[in-house]
Image (tube, rainbow, N blue to C red; front, side, top):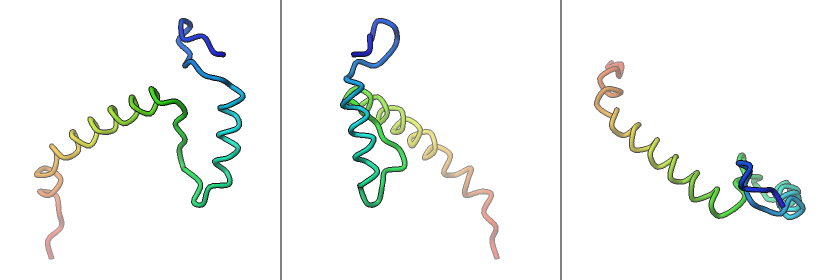
Length: 68
């Protein structure tokens, strides 16, 4: 087990390796693989914040559109 006190995610390295290998057989294979429910929750939180920031730029982005 990895020690979360050392800044590493808790988890079973054998299970992680198995899931990584299994992901190669998924069609389509995932471009990114997040292992662990906490890691997934944190990743979703960060990505939702990024989407919010991009949406806030909608008017600026549209102002640079090329109009025929």
